[in-house]
Image (tube, rainbow, N blue to C red; front, side):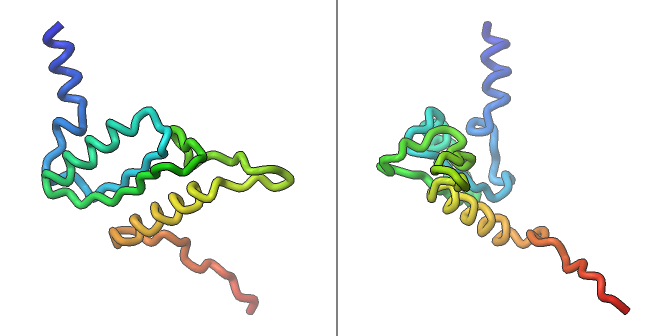
Length: 114
């Protein structure tokens, strides 16, 4: 049993991440069952000096569960994401843009008529 526990610890990002871990964006809904793990991971990374950006929802009244970012439950005819999902998408894009690693937009590929 100890070997299994050791393997589980070795797979835990919270337990094994070092200060070389990349900048991290974490988001969690106010009804997400993984909220404690996300909070613990954010604290562990911050304690190791890793830049962490968080978007943690509290008291929204919408009971934002796991993967709330993909909740397209607003009424038809055109289902739209929850406002919090829209905020999370923009926060994710802003975070990625802040890394200045890759362009987030396709280059202009307009073909001009000659």
